[in-house]
Each structure stands twice: as C-alpha cells, then as structure tokens.
Length: 171
Image 1 (cartoon, one colour):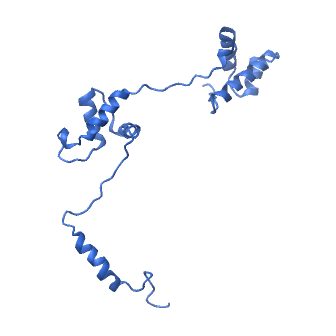
Image 2: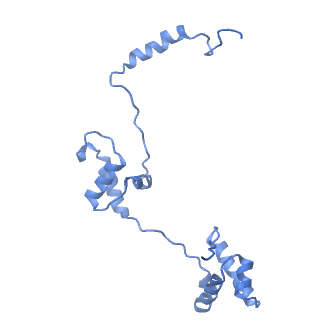
Image 3: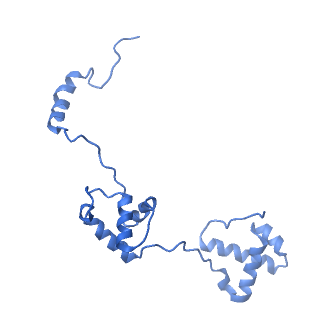
C-alpha cells in the first residue's frame, strides 16, 4: 500500500511557484528524493515536473485543474428547462402546482432524454437561480378573520402580564 500526498490547496500561482522551487533545488544538484522531502510531495511528482520542463520549457509550470464531469444538460437545455418549469407542474399533467425534485427529474427525462437522480436536482435548480421552498401546512378550514379577532380580543384578556408569562407563586 502506497502513501498518497494530496496536492496542496491554493491558487494556480502558488502551485506553479512550488514547482519552480522544486526544480530550482534540482538545478542546485539535490536528488529527486531530497527535493520531494523539502517540498512535501512524491519524488515521482518532481520527476514529472522535471520531464515536463525539459519537453515544454516554462509552460510546464502552468497548473491545469480538472474540470470535473461534464454537465448532462447544455446551457441551452437548462434555459429551456427553466421555461418548461415556469409553465407550472399542472401544465405537465400533475394534479398540483408543486414542483418536486422527482417531478423535475421526470420532466427532464421526458423532454431531454437525460436521467437525473432526484437528489441532484437541487444543484441544477440552484444553477438556474431557484431555491428550495417548503409549503406551509395549514388546514383548509382555517378562518383567518376569526384567528385575528382571537389574537386582538381574547389573547390580551387571557394573558397574565403585559410581558408574557409570570410565576403564580413566589416559591
């Protein structure tokens, strides 16, 4: 089992400077293993930087970051999805206007032929500038006028002190 040393975090300039320092130590006559110990990396990395400099010159110091997995939907498709979602869930055959991640995943699969796990829809929605919303749960029978009347008339009469709760006894 080998020992893995992760590349340190930092800007591309910091990482390129680290590579320049390593190669400067090599130029001074230090071995690959000595340079690796001083810099805090594997000797194979120092060797790779050395070989890249021989082949490409100063371009060897350019830091290339991995772009990650390519997106499943193009930017144009994401914009089209947003227009689709703005029409509402009912327009797409759902019984309520609520968009859930599962519903959005189904629409994406139907319209674009791309499968998204519902757990990953949140990132996509965030990219579109949408945020997660949780509907308020209220009884259909709720009477707002009656509740407001209770708050203004009954509650002040029931309340023990103007500041709220107060102990009944001094124990």
